[in-house]
Image (tube, rainbow, N blue to C red; front, side, top):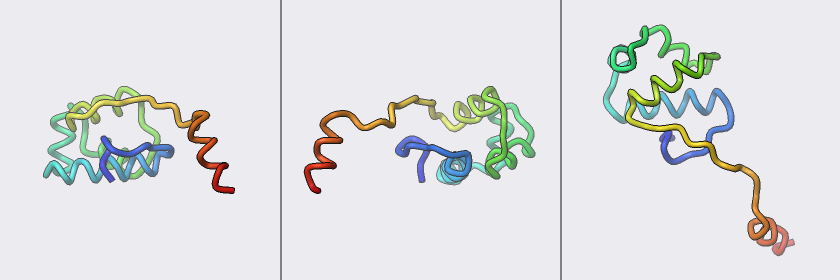
Length: 87
């Protein structure tokens, strides 16, 4: 699961996405921690789905060369119409 292509709704999904993205870039936890200015233990916590600060999350996302995007997860009228037209 790549962080840039998926919607994330839980800390577990975030943890999986961050770990996958780190590995896809060839970083160890220590590499990412150094690049983000954090301790390796913090990266371990993040990848375990533990609660971390927003600042830590943003530092780590930036160190991966990614950004955070807030998207509306609600269905719009056309999506609802399509979903119910099949019933």
